[in-house]
Image 1 (cartoon, helix red, strand yellow):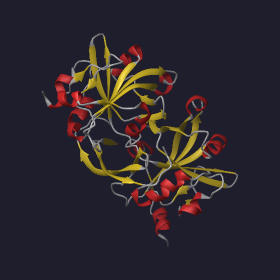
Image 2 (spheres, one colour):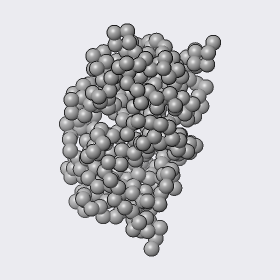
Image 3 (cartoon, chains in turn green, purple):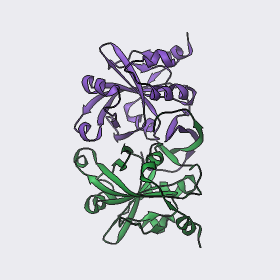
Image 4 (cartoon, rainbow over the protein chains, first blue to last red):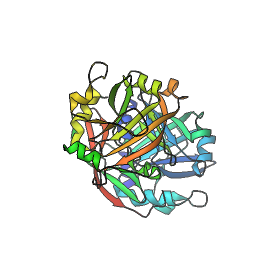
Length: 186
Length: 186
């Protein structure tokens, strides 16, 4: 069993009410889509939570991205959250278009079947959020899709994930230590 | 000269084309508003870049927040970006409503006049983005305001800012080390 396969095997469903804690810190995510039997993957940093439960996520996918047409046509995707161990692969996904390249094969990422959508999970990511597009009214003006997370998976062995956070121009901040403060925020 | 005053004095205007690098990593920000001579401040984690230049930012401000009415009425605000040194004050701002409390006085934050909007800058924050509301069509359904950053300020002495990133339930990730990868992403 390869490392990525074992990561899939030990994944557990995550309560949808806890999804916000994964996306609020602003990690770079890998968005996967699938159309006509062809999967693709792109990094994305322009996303925000819009509602706790069911979890709604707003995300920007430009029509200059190859994923745009698949997302619009299939109305399905997966938000996969990588950690620093695969940062080099994440960046390569952003440097290459899926138009001519199978980025999974090219950059060593493993596509695994999702449970609710046709788009695949990326096995090497510690969390995977299966999503359906529920609102496209802001797509024409802002390329903003509203997604509903319909199923969430997490690797219980991850502990505090060392997510990566885009600062622009090749610079990424790696998640540092966690502090606790007496917050009444959810 | 107090520490916060000297921080204001040394701030420089930041090119609007560089604003995305501040917000993409997903920091908790402090949103300031002002209405009828009364300023308020609230922490916010639900925000995303929508466009590079002019910088457009989508942010969620619920109508349960005291800031909502001021933001909707004045169509102006400032996004202030704090670092871990003032994390305790940031969290206290989230635990308290501005309805009855002057949070600046209560939590040791210094309001300084902005250049383009009535809402104040928070002196203790290393960056301040003066914003105008440019689209309210998603407010009814998602409490999502589209802001245009019209002026940006940064403390050139900050180096790599130790921003804080909300993981929920009193847990905050503090920005860790920066890595560089050969990215073609902007």
